[in-house]
Length: 114
Image (cartoon, rainbow, N blue to C red; front, side, top):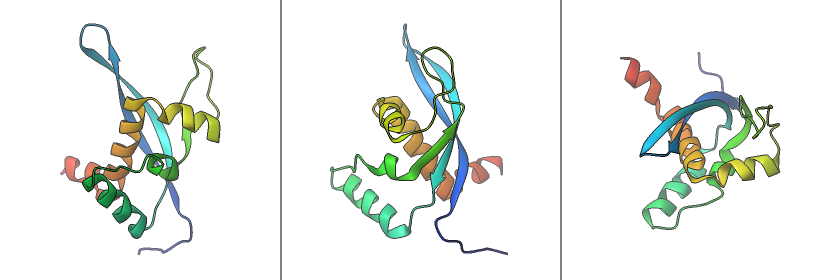
């Protein structure tokens, strides 16, 4: 049975491909908490992307929490508006968050398992 709730949130894995010297990447993962945005918000973002004017606030709208994000010293980085802004200012981290969000709403992981 499908349940319609107000302001639903859910967790989803995010894989960040962190560039390293020599043209290599290191995979880093964390768990994002996403707000299930309404379809009209998603449609607006997709249209902005098609128009060449991506909404730079989109990742901040959908990302409302996290687990397993660390600071430079290896300590847990507490989720806050400032820390979210720092994370999303890293281009490959922002890309990973947006990719994970769209995967989560499109059933991407379920399709890969079949």
